[in-house]
Length: 277
Image (cartoon, rainbow, N blue to C red):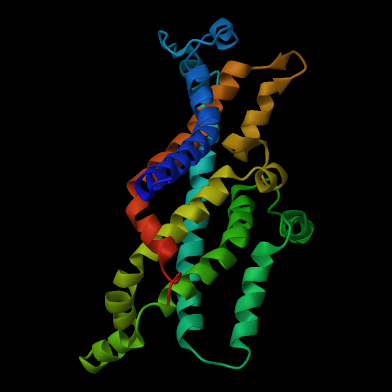
């Protein structure tokens, strides 16, 4: 086989594999999106229709007073947003300290911190439940925010430590020689080059909290249920409300997809920082 033909054949194989992987990943999401815009009969019609008149009755019902979906959406926004903010602030400060300060057992402490994130969720769940129960936080929004912060903080701290190690120490020292205080050097000189890592860490923490079901089902009360927990209410003894289930899934993934597309440049740069030294 001629080299040119072999090269074309190789590209065809690679593009075919990439196309199959893309179809495999997107087909369930596309199917869910289309089903959320169909009637109950149209959802199960065979052969399936890909061109049809959209029906928004399910979304209108969900966001009506009877559907009460706005309440669950608000709870998800508050719990995931506040916990991500706390995790970013504490993770940034802690990660900077671990990246810059040299002390005995530094590597062991860093590994111990990330090991708490790698532990199975059920292993963390029981101790947290006992502590929160003693503090009266079970069934409260504060307890849910603390639980998400416990989940995200080790990850944020570890990620920011890696990103800060990529920022040369010489920049801080030069800023301090020019008259900046330690905090001013951190804020004006270190944070800007580490911003892609900060954005990537924030988006990932937000996704972890937004998509969580286990923590929310244990620590949230009836008034603080988030969207993933509310989705289970669609499974009743009379059957599954497929239209609302598809619409709920669409609402759950849409904000994260939009956020990922908006900050994709920072996400790629942030996740690639520290990959090559």
